[in-house]
Length: 273
Image 1: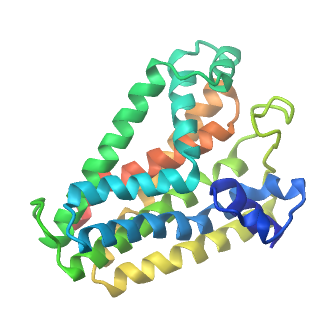
Image 2: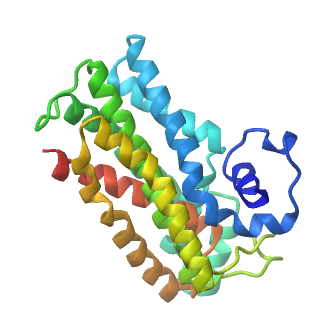
């Protein structure tokens, strides 16, 4: 339970520390439990979208509020990592320079443009997803029905959890690129043994079971065809990170999650059209 509570404390800004005190060592395992945190972050995002549309807001406004709700819940943790990732990998010319830029608290041109592009595409894709759920084969935007809202919410939850599941693999594939003293949060995530991989596979399967069941129940089982997409992208990003910095950082984890999630939204039309 310490590892799960450490993950909740690390990946959200809710006061979980009031319920339980965990040792510092527990934070070395937060990425292992990251997929299950998707139930909370993806669930809040989906719930805000459904409630906003239900009270009469447009789909475009509801999509923006859904994104904002997750930003508030996580403290923009992943977006901060994405900006640093774009700055470092865009402006760095070697390993040392890339890591130095990524650790710099200032945001550069690559980070600003990367954030605008990713968040803009995510917003547009959410609006488009609602159109697909309302009228299969169409991207028209209008007030969705109750069934369409539930289908949209289940897909949003699935994409959040699936992207976190894919991103969480990085800690078993590459070594941490910094030492504990050099890390921003002074914590180095642990790698995985064979037993660790088996346990993590079970955690990912459990995390995915809820949104997968929801998608089947509400009538969009075809989105499961997209599940390999984030895992393929994660492997490609992992190879790039290994070549550039010989490992990964916490910023890389956040970047992988957001890019994997975006890959699902951008390809959802293939399965739903």
